[in-house]
Amino acid sequence: MAEKTYNIQDQLAHFEQACRDAGLKLTHQRLEIFRELAAAGDHPSAETIYKRLRHVLPTLSIDTVYRTLTTLEEHHLISRIHTVESHARFEAKIAPHHHAICRKCGRISDFRWNSFDTTHLPDEISDWGKIENKQVTLHGTCQQCAEEKKQA
Image (tube, rainbow, N blue to C red; front, side):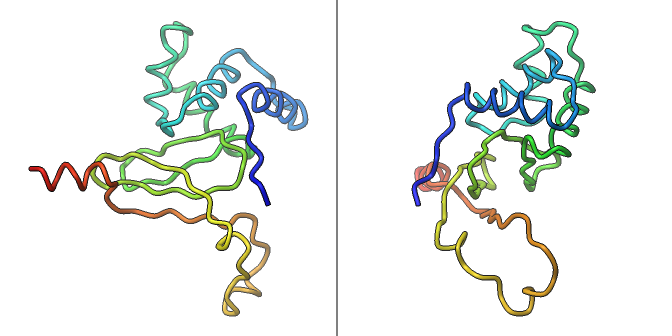
């Protein structure tokens, strides 16, 4: 099955409709925070989002960014990526996918793993309950960091 790709306009339209469906006010700050996430390819932290938007939204506070991200995550409009760092990273990508995180530089790469996505759960967890999401996070050293280490 081919992966459907979503451009930023599609993501914004989906976001706006999802906010209406959830009864969330579509504030300018929420829209700009989501827009930044949809355009970002680096899975930014709340602090990074704040730094990127403070020149566009001078009244934006870091607290507003944290509260907005929490609200959007609670309504399944964005995803939190748990890292080994002390702060979470976020994304607005709609299509199912997995992550590989470099322990050295912190870069997060998205990847698809169709055979994993379609694999049945092991018997020992099959009666656990309703599974809503199957996601893999790989931790290791990216090729760029490995090459830098070889050269050092």
